Length: 489
Image 1 (cartoon, rainbow, N blue to C red):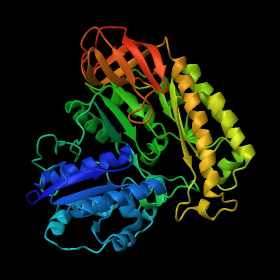
Image 2 (spheres, rainbow, N blue to C red):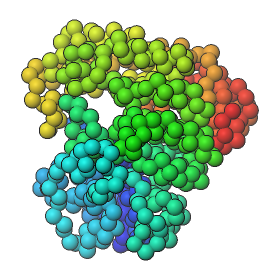
Image 3 (cartoon, rainbow, N blue to C red):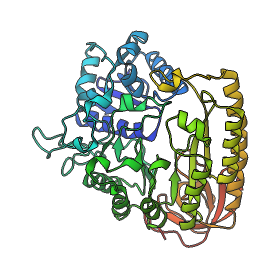
Image 4 (cartoon, one colour):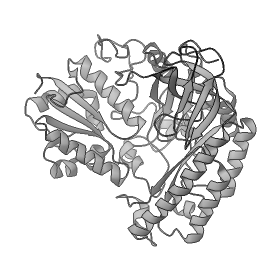
């Protein structure tokens, strides 16, 4: 086993968790802990996911695998927050910590290394930790919110100082973060929590009420990320369209996007997690036409049947969603759109499913995620009548996934002959590079392979002509000379 005070940090789940892990990494390295990728670390810290059943199983499997190395194992993240003492009882191999422990994570791991076991927390509804009214939240005292800047100046009593290389500076807004991935793309958390009450989702209960980060903190963190070689920012939250409502400005995202795009070295801004019910014409215009902002719309439709959506406690139907897509494409015909859909929701009929299939055929989405419904403890949907057999849910999910694959491949084929701006992420050799066009988000939406007669720098944004497609992936040839790193054409 490695020497004392070495930690291996394992991150599961979404990009929001990646930001949280980088906060933990910044705090630990500032306190003298050494990060290592080896499983012979003295402590393995697993940042878990608790969103759906499959994610829970993956998190538990990771914790058990870590315990098998002989290291001391600590669970943090959504699964740990959601189940607390229950998880600790079921997995005595791991210590279970809460979001409230993040600010003192180095002390907690010192205790673990010393063999002291802290009682796991009792799960609680974190929505109750902030005022019900959004306007009262910014000034309220509240427990630690992962991935948010710390208030107060640097220095004694004001945060972490003397941070090691690669960790965000302690001057100005307190950005406690250490990059764990050296690539040109990084997530930037603009808010945490959610005020919506979707009947299938338990996230608000363990992530808390919606809380925006101040714009100045976000710009400062973007500047730091740019200094670390980042050229594309992926803005993440539980609900990005709510950004600013607790700051007294419902149009705050409209102003934030140009400000982030103006940060030197940042070539592209991408927004994720948009609620269709909260999309405004002004925001659509900013996203579709601001230089440096990708015309990319990650819209959380979830279904297209009005009756199913009402049961989900959500807005809209297929016709309204198509009207929203028309509004977007009128401003930017080449805009990229992705969405996720739940099939097999309680009470979903064959007619509802057919309505969803018709919508997908009409919508021309670039990326489609299909998930079979599963009960989530503590959600209203788990108690609804009309629960479907798991085999039927799986069949519907498989059939819709097959349709989605065909539609996404057709949408990609439609882009052949068009010009796309590709952020170069890897040099594959032989004048071939890999990156992503504006309609392709990291990890989930496919890639673009670019052939170029002149060298391209990783992190640069280049214009290319699409020459072919394979499923959701594209091939392209450079149209112009390579841009300087971080500078779009």
